[in-house]
Image (cartoon, rainbow, N blue to C red; front, side, top):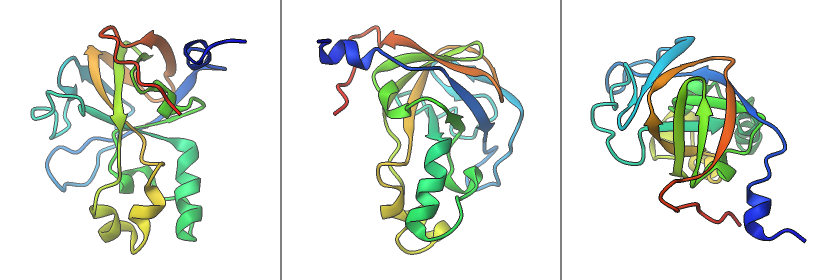
Length: 171
């Protein structure tokens, strides 16, 4: 019988990058380029937060499959990705399982650093109850480990535990 670490390392398949969003400045409408450069230690080129994000929240990701869940919890259709204020939408791979692990999207290597919890703006944008609807479905924060271009349609490949040994145990 495999132990928990072996189970956490067994990804059934790779994922796919479905959407990219970046804001040129605070509260500006999102731009949705087909590709962008991820800059090591900073975030996505052209994103207003890139200059401030030197820590663990340089890029935010959300799972495409969770958009429908959020909509169902709200009693409406799945919200468009730009409403949720995330940078990347991926499908086909469990984002939460990438917490504490390195993964590649296109040429860039990222490291999952934590959960992207919903913020209070969700109530303002989606309406009452949206904060609760997004809990557990807000996605993942990540830092950029190696710079590179990423593009819609790129494969998301799990590469292994974070090099500093911070692989978080997922319950």
